[in-house]
Image (cartoon, rainbow over all chains, first blue to last red):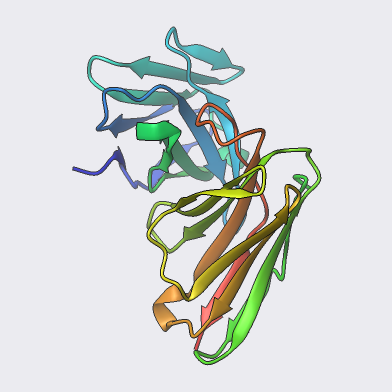
Length: 109
Length: 114
């Protein structure tokens, strides 16, 4: 089983749609969780950290489900500019950060 | 600009060449990283430096040789590479190497090995 697993997509959605991605992780002792965003041919950038109680930043909501070992990212009212690859990042043993392969989102007009 | 600058942005080299990638961060961070990103694969951690000391070498072949002269600069020296080493090499920095810290990435150096 991969340490961090994401559906590669692509998720093709119309503008204004709500879309959600999940990311599963294998180590139940993982402590920190993040979503990064990577635009085509650019570097990854932090989108948001994921807190145990869930957190929201504008149109973006992140949730953590420790029992089932997954995190989720919900994007409401999708914009064309949301088109990117969304990377799930989890700390595993020894504070080692592990990246998922990413989920591609394409928002179309 | 993210505060992490990588040069060169693009590099083409033959298998017998020796070249170096450079990374500089202006964020006052204490930890620096090299990651490799190949198409459709997750980012692979290569090396971690914390306060100039190497704290992780993720079983990277010896044809990749890192150097960290101070907390602001990181190099990746390349020699006798293979075509499968062609990838995007990303440098990142963080306040420390604790996993709870956020990484700031440079724009990457896209390497092609012929």
